[in-house]
Length: 129
View (tube, rainbow, N blue to C red):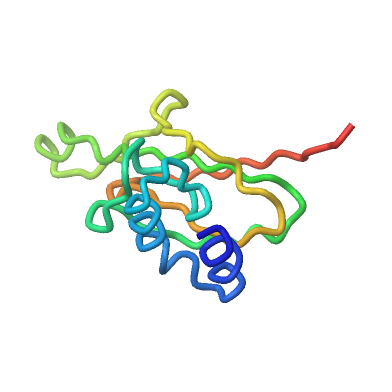
């Protein structure tokens, strides 16, 4: 699995399309660690294609990347009372931080919830001391 999904599929450029298949395969073999398939930002359980968007991530830079998602929507009270769409802001505590940092020179995928309204990317410069 590491060679096929971790090396071959990423090199072919289709890691995002095969992320759910990769997770299903590893789950079938009772593997708990599915990081070779990509980063699951939906929840702490399996990625369901009906409730997630799988996005390709090309990290060809020299930094580690981490993603966070927020699912805030419009203010329902403003919509009901004034028929006006007012977007709610995502505060720091409302962001769900994806569990893995994506290493440099990596092509992979992340799964985010379909109702996500904001995706935040942060980077880290790793210095080996």
